[in-house]
Image 1 (cartoon, rainbow, N blue to C red):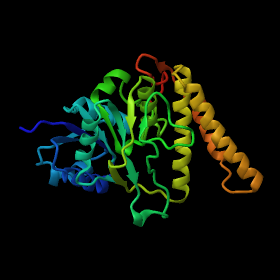
Image 2 (tube, one colour):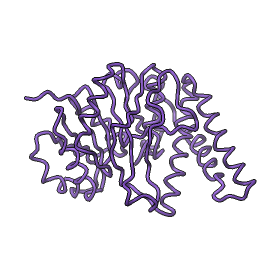
Image 3 (cartoon, one colour):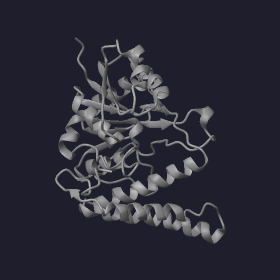
Image 4 (tube, rainbow, N blue to C red):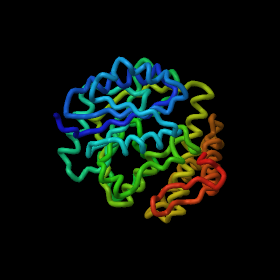
Length: 308
């Protein structure tokens, strides 16, 4: 039996039209040995039925889950996975046939690499239609220092992690990310914990995939504001944890957005960016309602909140 070197984890919920093509693109990879763990949080069996054409593939492991939130699904996938390398993507992404090989190749070439954030591109035909999260690496390595406030952080749609990192810094924070109280930021939070622990983060352009999740109009604006809302919660958590460099992280990020908003107001540009600052500060304030599990470096559900 071929050794399983990479476990790919994909969370999904109520997207039967997306999960099938996503799984098909991953299973088109041939080497090295890998498994695909799909954690399905859907409200019905439509996603499972969409996967029926692929369930005979021994590499696919399907897990129905009553949990909610992408972070909780990823944590469930980590617990089920059998490989020393874990790769994460989303159901609205499509990977090339060499994606798994490229991930394994980066880790093999650099035994000190702990976390990878690969390139996330938008298909040409969807560019300009609306907004979708993408990531173009502009610095290959972060170690001992966080990205600058002007730099983009890698995103969970194309993220790979050595299992040993989760042993060192803990799993994803289930109060962060899509489907949770704070609807983004789980990968940034993990990256902060990893860098603070001395881990090496690599951002390889050669590990690339396509993201199809385009939002338009009010939905796009809501998504952007949601990112800032979650960022406020992430940075505030690390202020409270006294994470090394946490104060500078928040201060520099806030200063960047405040400067942009002030410039826009003075020159009459729209949108001004003031809404983004309000979202950032609202997320920071709202996060204070939640106690911290300091040992695991994650938010703990507030009493009576039911975790959301």
